[in-house]
Structures are given as C-alpha cells and as structure tokens.
Image (cartoon, rainbow, N blue to C red; front, side, top):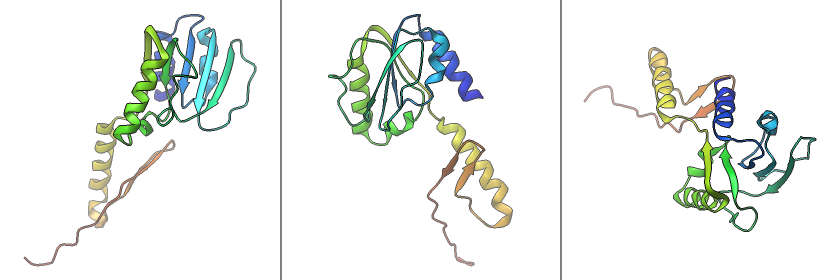
Length: 163
C-alpha cells in the first residue's frame, strides 16, 4: 500500500520514456510496465524467468553488494533498489561496493533511488510494544504486521529484588 505507492511515485518522478533501468534486488518487475521504459536489467541472486513485456530485459544472478558490476552493464538512465536496500548496509564493505557499483552503472545525469525501512519508525513501534507488554512482565523481542516480522536480540536483565 504505502510501499507500493512510494515505488510508483519514485518511478513516475524519475523515469523518462525509453529509459534503460537497472533494478538491484529486483522482484516485482510488473511495476515497470506503465513506465514505458526501453530496456530493463534485473540484478539479483535468484533466478528469474523471462516474462512477456513491452521492453527488452535480461537478468543477472549477482549480489550487487558483493560482486563488481562494472563489466556487466554501464550507462544506465536509472539505477534503483526498491527491495532489500537495508541488506546493502549490513557492513561498511557491502555499502561501499553498492555505491561503487551504482556510480559505475549510472550515466552522467542519471538517477539512483531506493526504498528502505525507517529506523525511527521501527524504534517507535518497538517502544510502544515494550510499553504494552510492560504490565505482563515480559520484554517483547519482535514487531509484527501482516507484511513483516522484525526480531530484536534482547537480553533480559534480571535485577535483584533488593539493592
């Protein structure tokens, strides 16, 4: 809903007709159907089957945070990451590789955009969950919705009754 709206809005704002798009951690390629792009490149570690689309496409089984993409594709109008962007920031090395790949893929004047979770929102939801569970003398270790589960590593501190 909001996530899908954000993807659609970013595509409408940044993508011009017949653009060449490189989608990192691709998944739902249907979101590009109405954008009138010229060519689509999907980069992911999983295998993707071709679908009939009004634009040409090819897929690479690569991790954009580990492997060098310079030799595969260059001079793209758009490089985006509309899923799993948070995985690119698990370590400094992964983040640096992602940024090197993005800068080598984009042509001058091209755009990079992505969507990721907002840490402030996650923390606020977790705090509300803690407050709600406070009366039960438990510390929750996760936040859930119909779309996700975020689990926290929680070490419960046991305080002595006195002192």
